[in-house]
Image (cartoon, rainbow, N blue to C red; front, side, top):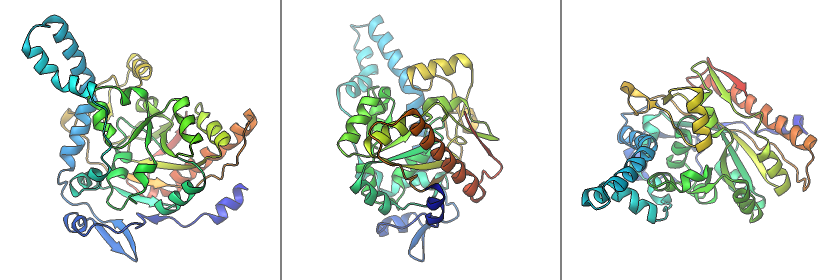
Length: 352
């Protein structure tokens, strides 16, 4: 079983070219080069709009909860003043309107500036086309890690010009329910297509044959990683394996090198407990110049092979532990095999 999968594992390609790239994108972002029919990220270019976009996402992520709190205080303190409602207007409008998926907007040269800024590239053992073919036959769960402060690796993967246009609509990202409800945040992150990461929500999607992207570590990993170690909050996260076994879903691991390097967070046990309870960051975040401006560090999206999960309608604890161990082995293999092709060859991997 496992040894056979390793023998049959396809050779990884860097940024496999699966869909025709828009010539205007190629002209505007010449970091996309063609070599033997495959796209690859060449040396970084000036950041274009990447710095602006990365900072915008970070500022909204950090300050939207504070802005909402200040708006509520102002409305309670001065409910009859027009200025109170003007200050709170963006929050009120966002609270009333549902989020909108903007897949076409994600595939624009302006959004691709994020890939330039983070010197983003991909290593794929399983191509987008193969992922879509799998999803035609059974649900697929793409499990990405580590999470980092903000998952810029996943965001870059969504706006990457070489991404197959069929991936985003079929693979929404499962997130904490607060991100699908909190005003401003739900519209900022909602453009990528989100679903709640609750068990009932994921079960419903899998029963319909739907696939999704999942971050197993979530907010817990924000307080774990260091410049020398990538710590994955994985040993206690076995529910996704049980869910996949019961639902006849396949699991594909993705390691996001650099995802924990672009932003730093102030770490304290009280703030960690508060953040995990609220399922969102409740600590100070900084990057360049001590501000919420992401550092221009390399991000590499490394997608492995499917782990070959069987369909077990009623998996035992032994079944879950066995396939969870297989998944952990694949994650470690991905990390050790490809870290030398990134800026993070000095790092070690720890499962927590």
